[in-house]
Image (cartoon, rainbow, N blue to C red; front, side, top):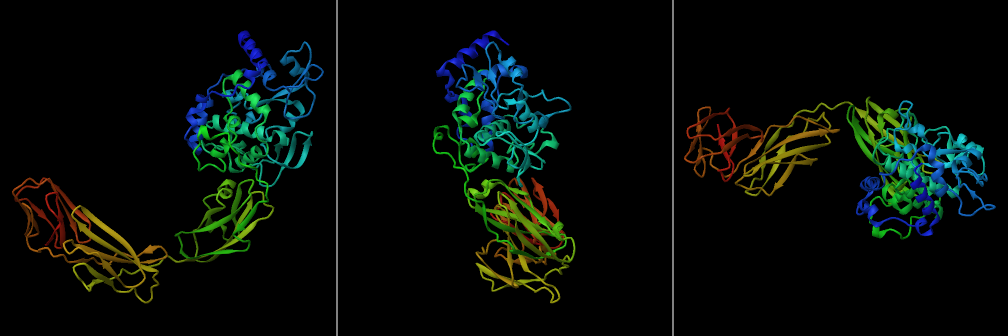
Length: 571
């Protein structure tokens, strides 16, 4: 160890002013004005750079960050959070020799096996980061193994501080066992995990140990995990021990834990305040209280049903289930079971507790995708969240054959005036069921083509706001179970323009056998031609006087930058 560094550590640890020095205001400036994932990324930028310590030297640093302030018979005592063993630093002992004499171990809060690549665990600074390592009683460390944090339902190791055993249902992320620290240290561990999820969000967490972490920059923690850690942090707020340790760790390795300096930071990133912007000047006020009431789901009611109606095979129908309630201490889980479960899909399997606790409501999308004809039923189960019951919702749907729809016949407009008309069409054949009709109204405006789509249950629609100088058309389709028929014939609503030779400024389109002839005495940059259905049939750049453009028989609109409005011409 560097002798000069050791002297600095000793002086700093013996100086009360430095022991509670706090942080420089500029240290966290990048976090100001950020929210949620951008706030998390900014926090990482602020604290990720630090001195990489030697793993074997950690006890030398811990003698300044992890010892009780009170002496026992004039001796220092290690402050380890895994047992209540009396581990003293006796006269004549160095930190390392005391560590060895007390059979203590260097414990990774986030187990190093979770990021192992091959047989290598030392490739990342997380291996010796003091925010992830603490002095530990050997027996407790062995029992803790590499299990995730979580509340223990049935313990097989319990020394009064550390409990290891089967997880309470809904916790553990699929692990068969969890490690539960004492209540007085749960917030300490939570803030350490938040630091790890922030600084090391780019680690490729081993797939077999994805109980708490995800391979993503945000949220990096599994919903059940961050909900539990948030609650632990609320129940065990930042202590003087953590404040002093924060300063000591900064002296040792050069960085701080922002979740200790800002007790509400985790709420802004994962919790109840994710919709708010984080401002440094706004910190230091009231903190989010712990959830103390019983979790309650008031909606939906157990036994309720949702009917998706009829859906064509191969199609999809989405319904939204409103979840209302509060006091959830962990993420809710949702699953579909039952005989036809494969025909009902959920885009999410877990709902963060904060998504409901904050607003009191959450909309859960459920998709029905029948693959066979007939009636289908399944059950949506809603559970966890700290509830001891499961709420079941019956899902009902009917799969129908893909409809075979006959094209509709559109009729000429009725009650035509300069400013309105009624679009009309023949009804679908009597043997066809139609949900509604879709009418497409296309207007050929000076600055381009504009099409509106409208749904109608009858066989006519009154169109208002017509411009007599603008040509327009309409087509009709029938709709059934989300499928559309082929489009009808196109009906043209006549304008007041001339049909024979159309002129616009000094550009004239003259009809010729099988097309049109360009007559112009000015440069023309381009012309575009559309048929009566609004389909673009041709683009011609810099046409010259006398050019011939072949066209099939029909009604066309011609547009050009030198024309004041589209010109209709009949071939």
